[in-house]
Length: 609
View 1 (cartoon, rainbow, N blue to C red):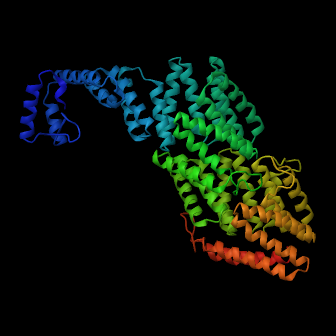
View 2 (tube, one colour; view 1 turned 60 degrees about the vertical axis):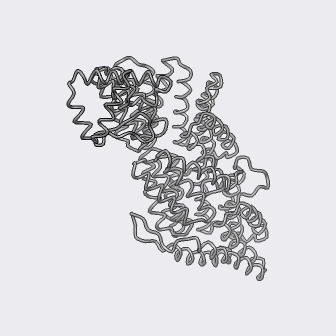
View 3 (cartoon, rainbow, N blue to C red; view 1 turned 120 degrees about the horizontal axis):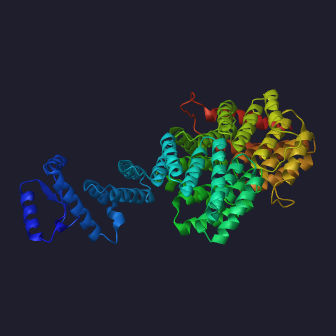
């Protein structure tokens, strides 16, 4: 209630003074000239006491006054205008302002509030029998960001039907794109089908920008079914179109998707360059959602359990800063899918440095969030993080259970990339339990002799095959495969060490009794691992080095390497919780498992095995 409703300000002020004295209204503290009822029931009784026609006139009068007094800042009063125009029975104008209020709330990430306003707009549209596909799509997006798949899907179905009925080709295209985004969380087969339909619609409309956006979604689908070469064709054509149109938002999104494509392809150098461009443009556009996506992935380009088979160039500290910021932003705007992904990726990063307690906390958080919103893709991602940490801590039995669940869900979502990665780690967990026959069975189905060593998933599968060869004492095969993995790594200089591959190659040479060469390879890997502070790998490298030195009859040096390995193990053990528990299993005595099994492992490595 405001005294600016008429020019008769003196009479209004006197009336308000009377109402304040009798305790019906009170002045608002920080809003001069504004009053509120002391109780909602008083307001309701006063409102109901008015005749319907009088109410309509007062609503209309108030709406006009608000529009006049806030002409330059209508966004601030859009919700009030929707309310008053609705009360004035001007449903058309009320719908316009309700939609605008929803857009305002969406821009500041107030998703629940946006849903309320869009719902108001939808109800008004139904009264007018003139519903807008845009409002249904907008509400669907809010539902999607809050993790409500079913509500988002229902709204998109309404939007698509309306767009088709109204002959709104552009609206139909946008709905198909939105369906593609939505289904990417649960089924890449469905996501790909919608993306291809969107591309067909864009080509029919002959709008270059729509064609480019559609090509990006089809390209991303190819990435997730692990066909990055085909994805590049679509992304690069989209990039050309956006460059011609000077479309900065389109360019930012394309650089972001190209960055992901190059990660999957195993080229972190190209990926980093694309992500740098994407982040720069998203900052200029003040696009928080885009920054969350790009910074999470760009920060992931340091050495970790995903990138330990390729050449990396970023430092851990820079990566962590970017990813932590992305996680904070996702929390601030209640973007649950983004928060789940960032938490899981951070978990991998911290684990690669031996910070296991923090890593496990983040992995559990990522999994809990993903399960709450039933985002199947990020459930797989969080299971992957959790599983790799347990595998690294030699808790192979528990890791196996996590990877088995992950393989099943990845196949259900039709994500070839995740299915292959999870299959590789499942095999690794079986090898850790000496279940060589089952590991053979799994890898023989996933790998053929002519399978390339290009993508991240392909290289992980081949690394599992190396570990299987080492487990079966097939040193020659392990050496051949690690040599090929080294040679096929993108951007690798001739003598550049990839620490994990150096470790496996050194163990193969030990088995072949080429101890001097093994020492050379292991020392190079050790030097690089120390530069990158790869603490979980250091104890393994020192253990393998003790075997190479023992084989050369250098007992004192072998003992020193053995002692250094044991020291590294004890140091890491301090960062492992004594036990961990989740909703699916009994408590895992992690520290005890790690200490017992690592000590057994380094004793075997000292013998050259």
